[in-house]
Image (cartoon, rainbow, N blue to C red):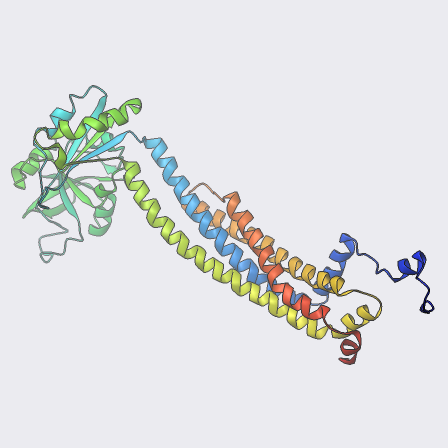
Length: 410
């Protein structure tokens, strides 16, 4: 274009002729996609790095959420109106005991529907009398009320529960973990408890509301006093109340169980144990999310590396576009868009992969599948941020290339 003579101002038409053309959004996306279509293998590997990080993040959150949903489902089915009473500690740190009459006193509270207890014994259980002393597999031997099973919502897997016909004799019911460690499942099999033989009458399913029973051998209350020198003091009392009266009953349980020393009584609910477990799981989830974040960062570095190499390889293209009138801003927009598209491909791929992993794991365990929406949104949002940051430096570098220097790179 011939410049205007000195002293004459440019006309409006001349200024319009010097104004660079604006790229529409569709043109920007098309330009960004061109670089991806010409290098499919490199694009796949870079997007895979992002996808692995997003999938790890979503799978961690999804599997944790699915497991929590299963616990909530079981608790809802069993009821959360179960209270647990146990002896606390003295001011000096010593051990205390609940009164032997604690169960009868608690049973007098009007809203209480069911009450049952277990009592710790000093007896040990072995598969047979030839097992070395001390190799108990961390199994406890507990005296149990005949009403324990309905109070904790437990079920018998094999055999039957203790009743009036068996609670006075050397008969035992094993929790699910105890049966597994002893490798004893068949009713009628004998096990060695407290220096004498006991006959197995039943094996329980896992008890979600009282998991301490899973690793226990349960003996009838009268039989424990007769054969195992049990002192008759309950170590744990399980109380079922009306749903509407849980808080009120909880408030009077300590004074009812031990009127002389209510401060030495602990009262808890299954939800308290659940909250403690949730705290542990949240710490583990935080660790795994950190690992997922590292994977995302590695994927972002891969995207940035891909974009830098792309700039070096496409110097002639950049120079030609600059020579034809493309502005620095348009060059920057092209490469940032390409980086964002690459990250979006990895983000959506990782979202699908993480959801599939969560669903497969939950299905294998019989859990409901839960994939929080916030985790999906966070994964996709993180990939967009990473894609923008990873493509920013290569885009600025590409925009600073002078047309002559870029074309000379051929």
